[in-house]
Length: 462
Image (tube, rainbow, N blue to C red):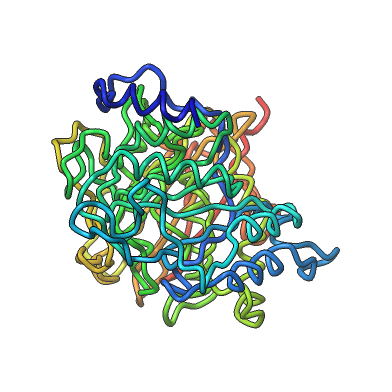
């Protein structure tokens, strides 16, 4: 406890402003060196959760019932389970004074009817080899006044309960990510930290805290993954819209998304996308893989019939390998094309990272979702994304968001893809089989509407 008080005294003397701290560069806590993989409750259950929700999720994620030989989702890499909104008790004594969901000492108030023993629940996850995550500064209570004791109480309980990770939302007034990092460092334990401030760069939108930015800088990232967007939803184009919000963090030469500081367009909706075919659900998964986004499942893991329908997607080891491997860049948008039904157009270059003004936000910032105008399938472009892989190979992802029409046929030069060769072998990552060779330093791919191609190009030996 003494170390927490020391950290508190340091903050009161002047908080470290965004971008100036030398204590919290990317990788400062050595967590999330690869994009985290797991499950979180919000997409499937909203705030309708209790401890049984998470016991069941732990059991489901560790059950060896999939594929041959039998494996679990945890065996495939999904080793985290995260509690989201719904554990809070909003009956504090001074709602206007920052004590709606905290007591006077700053400790968070828990709905003990739903969560009678949070420490025991965390221990249950640990007993199954699962890392457990919590959720702070939420929207249910929405405390509107910042209190330093609330930060300290949050982190003390985080440590006492034994959590391994935490998602920090942007609805309440506790938005200072640097202070949270200071307090967590003082516990002598590291935590995987998600900054869920909806892609707002500069001071956060609601409380104007310069350390409340969702966006890292070259030298400041007191968290391990950061939301680039507002909340995803199960609409057929929501995931495609959220994917676009990653582009500004994926600059070709100086990406802000990197190990231990990953750009994150929110939880996966694979298994929940409304009216989606297997191919369109798979396209969603491939998009998160090629941009090194955390792979956090959001479907109901206890709905075994629905889960079974997407297990071949979310356990594809070759797609997951693209997501997890690092070869110098997180992946980027290479080119865009009009779909076949539209007049032909030359590829449009990917948008490059630029400076952000205070309070600037990605489309769709903030819960509830739906603030952004989602791109219609009629207006969305066919896109080509690429991510370097070890030994000079390159993963290429092509997505056709058109709802109907002819297959899109696109050609992209090797140089644009970052491939140093004139010919290459091609592996189909969806089919998990070799797909021939391509020559002339050009890749040509044909993709049906609402489908994707996911390929691995290996330079031919000289």
